[in-house]
Image (cartoon, rainbow, N blue to C red; front, top):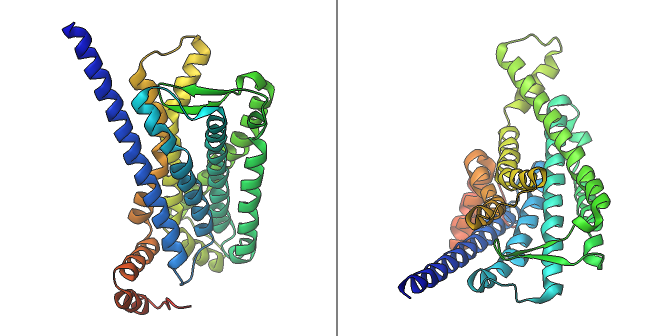
Length: 322
């Protein structure tokens, strides 16, 4: 009797801990990404094209924090999904769509950084604000359309009562699932590996003092490679894949061996470590981007005291009323 009571208390404590962790994660994701969006929206100074891609990532993660993560709090307490199949299907669709948006956006970031290094003299004419916005619109529309077949009723949603999330069942449309994986991961992974390899090779050449005959190109290249956004964007990509690799490896292991891992802590952990990726951006950007730190400081001062915000903006050459 005492052992049964102990197990029940332990189960309740575990459920409460999971619910609290998910709640904290939801709040952290929403606040951090709202802060990124508000900071860039408030910033009136000169801005780089890469900031629009960072805004796209922030919007995707904000939607995840608002429309996906909170629905897992109550199921973590009760152990069951109680919102019905419609909400389950919707959150499952949002999960995969927002994940695809993030993967595609990282691809465009790598292309943007590659062009900045490959064509430093023509970069501003090649990568314009309008072109960037068009790519982002294409990314969101294509991701939304590519991921929609399961939500149209072709398959039933799957309720994961261990990780307390809903997923779309891609197993019944295996051919389409493989095609979608190739369309999303294929060009993204290839572009990221190729583009950042080229960037690091050029960095190494410049540091080694290898002669570049075109002095104008060499000057522009050196100036461009000194931009911290190259390394920052690589760290963002690295953090994203490191967050999701445990989940990917676990699913691959189960598929290859046919053995289902029953450990609830592992299954819960790999999912939410992946979701935790939605929070890391503000830490990475604040640490590695001086311009973002300035913009964040101006935004915070503007909220706390309009006069201080205006003074800070004037000190760095900005006009908050533009």
